[in-house]
Image (cartoon, rainbow, N blue to C red; front, side, top):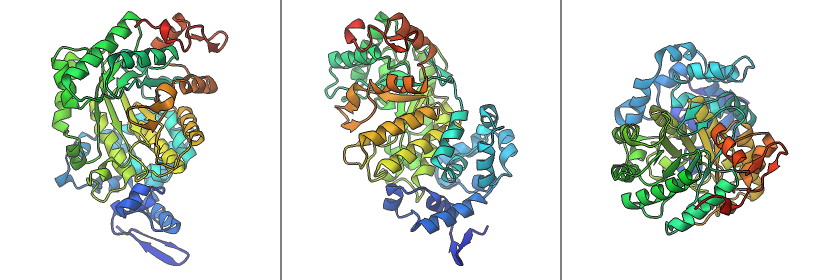
Length: 456
């Protein structure tokens, strides 16, 4: 296999497909930190020229992390749908990009081959796409899932209420939850990042949120984002749990740093199916983010976009209700500014949807990244226009526990109004009934933003 391209009489040679994939990537500070990024824009173009002529069959035969040392690579190979793969195996990455962008290639056609794609294929085609390309294809991919509500239907934009509290004060968590609900947020999930990672604290928070949701007949889901083993113990204590959460990495070594494995998540998934409180079949919630494997020295010399796609390949084993890329949270060492964070958000959303996942995004940045509020708002609109299933929502967009900037309660109704989107059907009926939103006049209802209208 010849991995070389000539540009202006200069031959650019690459030692492996792993190097081609890395140097095809859009500029990322994390790839620079790892020493694997293209050394110039010309070398990046050369790598993309090579990548565009690589077949999907070749990508399958050359996983970026060897089969012998990584359980995720083995999982991807053994779970691949052979019939779906045969339909696209002959295509080059460039031809695959063109097929995805064709008008006659609709969401049903894309879903028909999704199970035949390895993560490396999704990452490779993303590297050849512009930001608008990523949006156009992602908007075709509708992934509909159900827990207590139905997520991912066309014309819908959902949100997670994130009522974090730095001391896990139950009253504070519930007040923030009620405020978010009063703004029409929270139809994806009420999800708390706990300050204390214990089974007892997890059960206490879940039980308290469950009480508010039941007293107000709110059609949504709840989750506490403690470690999966902690949630398993909490579930065994007998608490309600609609969704079970875990952060994922794109390599076996990265997942070991998170304290997880395929076998552990298999056990957690089985426990949720047996004891979880959601009515629908989809009961898992995963979060990811470009740079996670590099941050734990578990990247094997692979670029962060390709590793992010491998997170999605891992997630789809569990038919999740939510997958969320926390795009700017890991920090500027991996995505340093507004353009890089924007690009990563659109890449992640596209790759997850292409692989058949219900993708959401925490459009966010840490305070030492070079991104401003205008850039963040633009990213939220771009993702929503591209069919993103859900965004975060929290008081004034400022997380007082995790110390980063995200999406505010006010942003969600503004984006819905701007793009003619609505929440999940079940939650939509609830906000009308509670006079939180008046669709006849296309404006907030009398209870909009009034936490007191939600029973404590």
